[in-house]
Image (cartoon, rainbow, N blue to C red; front, side):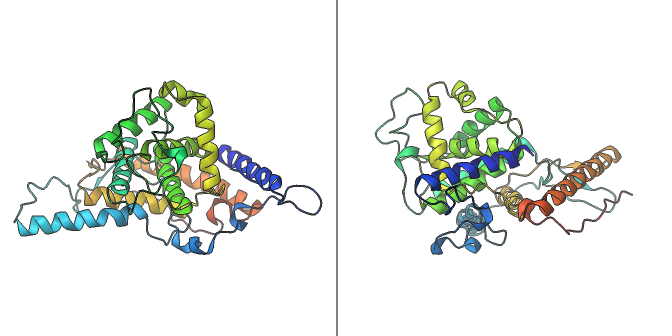
Length: 330
């Protein structure tokens, strides 16, 4: 409910912006379009945008495949042994599962995967297209002087992970928010036709986290709260960056359930390709009962969303009529 109210607020802001530019109905009031009715440029067909369409491949996974293939090829040529197998496999007597599900992802593992996706975005970028609002030289996040060659050195995965983990820990954000952050990031890169690179990655990631936390979490973090985390940034700078981010997204902050699920499972594939294995433990009776309780809770939640979808077209990603099987425990 909280995320829907914020989504409506952003749509009202979009309508106000259109009214200022003269895009209003004959009656004199602003013409407020549903987000699904907003027009997209021809070269931004919905089917080609992974952040909009569930069948489009995620950008981060395709960018990571080059490195994965090269690593496998190198290991094969140099006869590198995979080493001791640490991954556990289920058998007839024991089932190994991790504590991460699509409805309740593991926070630490999800942040690791999301930051790895950002790392591949930066490492395998097509060029260095950027905008001034995201440039750290023009809008520094700290009082420390930004070196002249700040745009020439790619950050490693650990550096990106520490930056994102600090924000999520201080603001007490959820794992779901991390996945939505990645959705908004790829949507920004596609819509604005820019690249995430060493000179802008921190501000782009910060803007995506800021927006995702407001849309996704019911207890949203205020812009001024981020100023307490990043001591040297001003509220005015945060507000300006949020406004530009929304305008570049064309106020499209909708994340369908199918797109969210696609990003979750693609992040798991990314983790598997890079040996970021989720911690596996034997399935006990207590954990099975906990999973069943989570399944029932999510089923009740989706029923509520289905009712809301009947009142608001295209909301909740057409959840009306979806069949779900009951969890079976033996």
